[in-house]
Length: 109
Image (cartoon, rainbow, N blue to C red; front, side, top):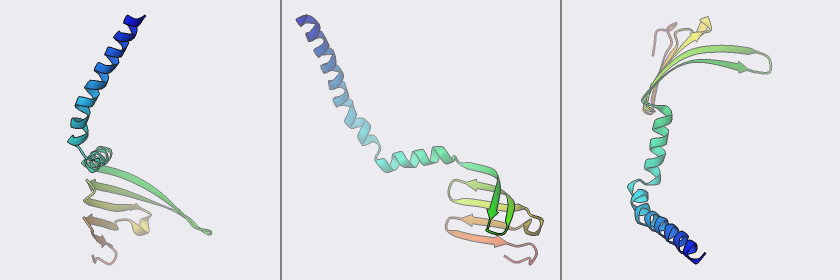
C-alpha cells in the first residue's frame, strides 16, 4: 500500500512540476487583449456579406426593410436598401469613423 501511495505521489508531483515549468511560458506568450482580439477576429472573419430583413413596429404601424450589407473587418461597410420601393437604392458607406449616405431621389451625397 505504501508503494502504491508513493507511486501516485510521484506521478502527481511529476505532473504538477511539468505544469509549473511550462505555465509561465504559455501565460506570458499572450496578454488578455491579444486573446480577446483573436476571439473577435475569429467570430467576425475578414469579410462578410449579409442580407438583412428588419421589421420596424410602432404603436400604429409596422413596416419591413430589406438590405444587403458588405463589410471588411470592423473598418469598412457598405449597406444598400433593397425594399421598400420608396427607399430602394439608398446606400450607406462607412470607413472607420466616417459615414456617408447616398439618396438617389435627390442625387446628392
